Image (cartoon, rainbow, N blue to C red; front, side, top):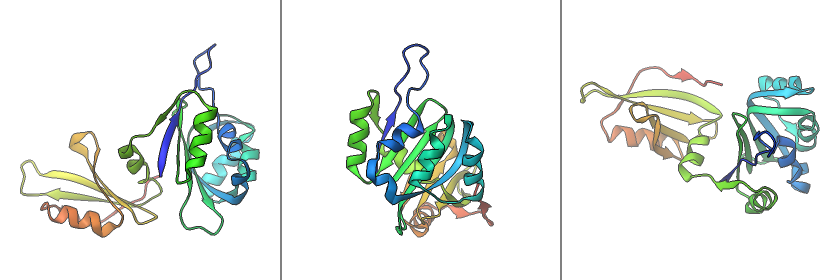
Length: 207
């Protein structure tokens, strides 16, 4: 996937001038062929309870229903919205609200990104590293790996998502992404070749 960040501001108060409903509407007929998963939601509006319930129960919802709910949301402070084509195992679009300051949109469909670039004015490409890091959402489990040959021992964090992709982060370098693998085994091999050992036990996925 490639991605963009949208941060159009209102001239009168400098608040974000784009909302979730604006983005969903621009998907046009493609919205009707998707179902959505919602997570990490914090929002305001008359239908905010509906979004929170969908996130809490991890219930997928049709694109039309999500747009209807989003039309009654005044502000999405934080939230991740993952769109899957019907009967597809992988999503083709991810919309992420970032602290009321921007919307990040990733998609494997370049036409969607083109439409959004044309509609909004303050649009920038997401760095590839940030896109890789975002894929670590929808966590399955987390592991700690330690290099006991160093002093003090060095620790890395391995995260695997529900799609099987894995990511290694370095806490000593402000949690920068050190390695991204298509499988857990790829990250495991990368760590083992660098003399890291897994700390026994896995941490549950955090939401």
